[in-house]
Length: 239
Image (cartoon, rainbow, N blue to C red; front, side):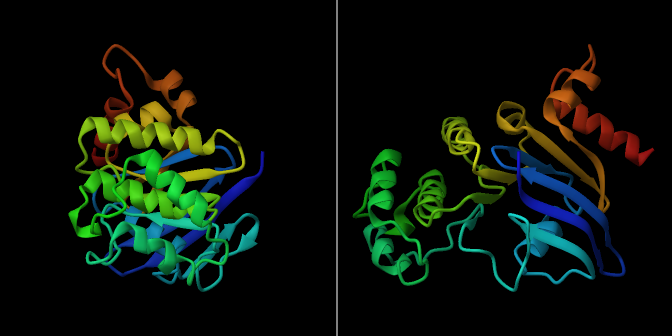
């Protein structure tokens, strides 16, 4: 199995906080959860991956090639907020997006909008948060993304919307040529869909393993869920 995203010994020093030698991979066909408390380094890591923040040292590789000044066209980011102009109508994205994405697929976009039940005639500002996230996913897939980077996309969504998005992500990686890096605080979502878990504490990787291996090793009468395990490990770090 090949590797879609490689993070190699990433260091970023802010003085009061240091991202200290971060290493992990996202393999093709996998969903990797990036988790940690606020201030653990998740946002800094994601910003370095996106070239928003410059690293001090280390390497980011997409599909085996070093990262450049901007993300490859087949890497898409879906955040927890709709970053499209609120005054656009959904159908207008088709003519706007083709100006920015060389592999834009108009037919695929229209098919996904119908599949997700998004009203083409609505203004983007009128969409619910769940529909907005689905719209951003539709845009990502219509530009032929092979790697999705999700930054807290299910935060604040109701359980039904979260479940729909999780099911979609499982379907997305089922072809084994696409991958997802999923930053979230909602570990129950990861327990359902993730293949691997990367747990950051104070700028360092404290856990980086297959989810099934973690669950097999650490589940007990006291630790019944992935959430219990992560809380337990975090408390141990504080001792």
